Length: 61
Image (cartoon, rainbow, N blue to C red):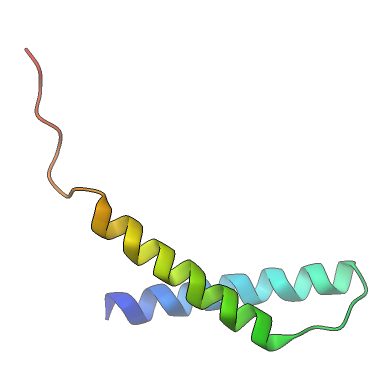
């Protein structure tokens, strides 16, 4: 469910940005560019979450 939610939110937000930027620059909106970028961003988020440790850093006294 975590992967589906991550992809869904990245897809919605990137498609929104893609639409707004294409409207502002007066270029045709291309739906598939948003899908490709969403897949890439989702993969980057999954990799970053795998690399960053879950446990808190030990306290130094």
